[in-house]
Amino acid sequence: MMTLLILVTLFCLLVPAYVYAGYPCALWLLTLGRTGATHRMWDTRPSVALIISCYNEASVIRDKLENALALDYPKDKLTIVVVSDGSDDGTDDIVREYALAGVQLIRQEGRLGKTMGLNLAMEKLDSEVTVFSDANALYAPDAIGKLVRNFADEKVGYVVGAALYTDKDSGASAQNENLYWRYELAIKAMESRLHSVVGGDGAIYAIRSHLWQPLDQKDINDFVNPLQIIARGYRGIFEPEARCYEETAGDFGREIARKERIVNRSIRGLMRVKATMNPFRVGIFAWQVVSHKLLRWLIPLFLALAAIGSALLATQGFGFFQLITVGAVLLLLLAGRGHLARDKNSLSIWVSVPYYFVMVNLYSLKGILRALRGETQVTWSSARSKEGL
Image 1 (tube, rainbow, N blue to C red):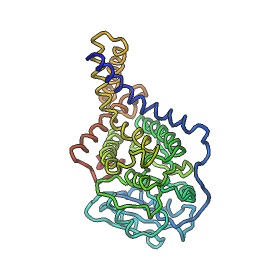
Image 2: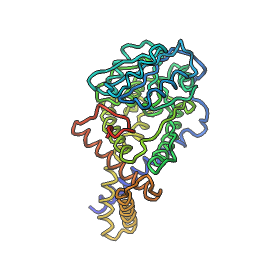
Image 3: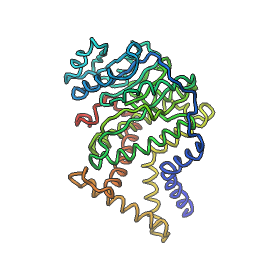
Image 4: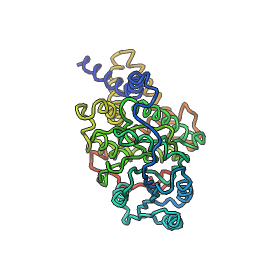
């Protein structure tokens, strides 16, 4: 019995270590020497529809439209479409001001969620490539061109750009989110060189329009849609030179709540496209999606079991597990200190990182449990708005 407890506890400790460190190291080894592009790529100018999803974005939509109209892409090849999910703060009125500049407004009544809005928009468009964006993501002038050059390879089905934060030094929350995102971008680059980047990015990603499949209302579009494309035999490429810029949520509570919503919807989406976890269907990508997504979402469960097992073994005099238990207690104490702080954005890195780590995993667990109960959030608000919580 003691041997079984030791083995189970060690396994539960190793899974998080593998997900956070082992998987990136394995990607690095497998892509060693693959420094250049692994697909055909050259300048091409297909017709493009830029879809901007929004709900109550009056504070930023004008800047976004000015940014979109200034993009360095042939005007006769670019269609700009704003999908408004029942906005009631004047967003739609601002968009209508740009009608003469060619901006189209598609208003969805009834607050049905971003995914249904995209389904509605895709029914009305006939462009070769569709680029999906958010209202707060401002593109570099050449972003569209950098995205679409990857479609010169007929096996590329979607391309994900690099969303960068402009407020990474504005507080502890932004610093932690930026650190995490830089880690994610490095993984995306290696995944792309090996086979495909796992998932899209709602701020900046493009697909071959004919590969779009109508989504369920509960689907998270920038995860399920790319999985569907992979299941059809295409690749997904990360394009680091296609850049956009946005702000973080700027607050631990909003950022953590956003991650709960993402996990809640994504785990259901993965179960909808289970073929992408079958190596006989998608090859090594199955390992990528299980390692990068499924196991990461389940980390809170492994950590909880590891903590319980370590505590039990610590009482039996096992020195290694005593150290693990002391470390876990210290982590929780630091996270508790962060939780009790009034001004969390002024926390030192020694407190903010444990707090961020613990809270992200707790809310991820909450998102999983909600998904298991059949609860899925289909509407969204900007992470910058308190209404989004």
